[in-house]
Amino acid sequence: MIQVMGGKYHHGDLRGELVRVSLDLIAEQGLAGFSVAEVARRTKVSPGAPYRHFADRETLLAEVAGHIACQLADRVTAAAAEHDAPEEALAAAAGAYTRYLIERRAGMNVLYADGLHGPDHLGLHEQTRRLTDEFLMRCLAVAPDPATALELMEQLFTQAHGYGTFQLDGVFVKHGYSVDLVVQKSTEAARIVIAGRTA
Image (tube, rainbow, N blue to C red):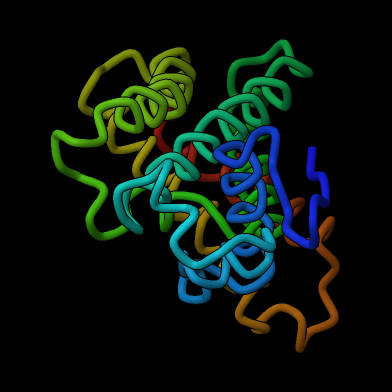
């Protein structure tokens, strides 16, 4: 909640607002457009105000990335839950990742961004693990061998991210592809990979 007092903006939850604005900024401009200064400007606070809650850019980005990991995990879980067959559930999860990436310009590119790998961001690592564990569990359901399941998960993440990136970069747009069509193609490609790994 934002209140105006004496011409200045006061936030009841500035920390939460900074995260929300950061998520929207990344969705609009991608990770390259993310900066604390721009987040402060859009939040209508002084350039130094965010640093009362986050020590530096990486700390704020880690908090944002944690929210992205949770949102992604919720998306893929919900998409997979609509299917009984484990192969279809896994393919739907891959398609859900692609859709989220297109909508929010955020996925593994943010979760594994430079500066977020160290011990200072253990909370982010736990939230990211929830997403990868969700995928790995579903990969193991169709490919019980752990090494095969890990390779399958790697392929699916790479492929799902690639489809989303092609749409965001305008490659598919030039062909007139809609978001729904790209998600459909991503899901179909996932089915092919899954079938190849489980044959």
